[in-house]
Image (cartoon, rainbow, N blue to C red; front, side, top):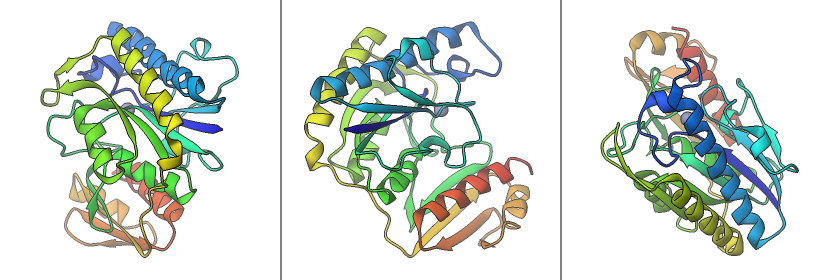
Length: 273
Ligand SMILES: [Zn+2]
């Protein structure tokens, strides 16, 4: 089968502080945690391949999107690497048979979710699609669903995993930690987290016939609450965005890739305000 892996870092076992996952102002902990992160991704791939032969692409979807230690991944895996990908965390996901979200985290506003945010926390205060509050995972799963790619596995803290399973009950979950607020966790150590992810990944592939693509039904409405009115001023200048409140904008369309690109444009433009 063809397996797509979108990997993030905040949901890796033991992660509970920005310094651990910040590639831009290297902190001694970052080098350690990018290794743990790489090994969690590797464990997911190994688990999947224990169930079935898999062609694998991994999209490094954290921060500058250049975190994975590539020489510690299997030699036949492809990597989608680097920033400003038009479809960001789910770039090049078309044509796959299933997807994993490894190291994912809670959405902005989630309680007991370490480092919770939804894309750019300095810009995005809330995201709703067709009235439903979304995390990165649900927005990304919506684009995968448009392509007919079902989400099969998520790893991260309990809030993240159970949040996804509430709307996608077929998704296998590897809960590697319990978040204690935003900056602390009660976590498995890396060896145990990697073992759990490997086991759940194997189960996820073995049970993949029960999974379904997750879709938002058109007509589609994206509503964004931004952090500042200045950001709303800027985002509202993007064609087809309407100002719906002092800090709120709305965008409507009929196909999910258009909505997803509008969402990406909004937080990239909003960051310039
Ligand atoms: Zn991240």
